[in-house]
Length: 420
Image 1: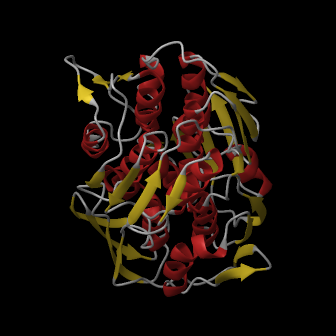
Image 2: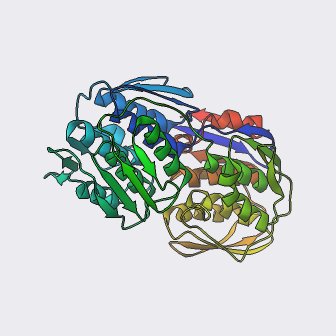
Image 3: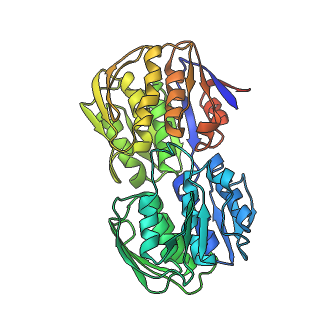
């Protein structure tokens, strides 16, 4: 376990490039199990979650080259087992994406309860209902065990929630099932669209991607494909908000304008000067203003993955802001630690927090990274605070941010990684 020691009070300045979308990389890696041919993914983010998924594929019998680089090659000529490594599954919620490909290739799938952020608060009921609708059957036991001895079949389904991984699970299962599957109330996020595009390259027919109604016609035999991942707009938005929190000037490369505009819209309303120029998103020194209310929502609303960071920004904005994250509650709980730094925060309930600013944050504390996104937010708070702040364990944040310490230093941050 490692700790990040931060000497705050420095305005970040410089340029940073984002790699591929973390939330696209995981389902695309899972999709590689659907074919015996080699698949090649480029612009893959070099993060902990991707490495865990790659190790899971290896444990199932796939050959994986390039782990820890931006180009990953996967060849799953044979699947040696239908049961994913329990210890790795416990570290990654995205391991649930293996269910569909395992059922398609072996007729069976066994995984332990997936881990990751808030594992006890997030169910996979939507994923299971989709697979059951396509002919899978539950097996007895404490874990998630499914069988489809006669193979998966096309189905028409309505998802009980527009779950991203639930939609991706249905797409992965339907890609090799005979007939046409229709998914209604589907998630519309860019990474869902990216999975649809990859499945098309592999031989499946997909229409309606990016809408709440997706139709996918499975192929009897999918083939290998190559795909370059699009830039991670959540990571790009993170660097943009961190720049605004520290009063700095940061240029972010690699994200599409149409993806990052969901972040830019809120930043502009908070009086942060920002915009896309020649493919580079730039945040300039500003005097942030409070918003009456910031609410997360499904795409293309403001993403829950950035609610913690924008809450920290609200501590540096003039006035009072109500932040409402109706999707998850533990991210806001994690930010209560900032009260000891001098932040004026009132946790109204599990989903709403009222922030009054601007306040001068004080260091001298050790902050607990309870999940990936709130961990990055606490690092941002440390960067804006006077004095030294420690944030641990750093590995929680490195699950989703590639070369984090090096990038922070490249922007002028005074940070040190301490190995415990």
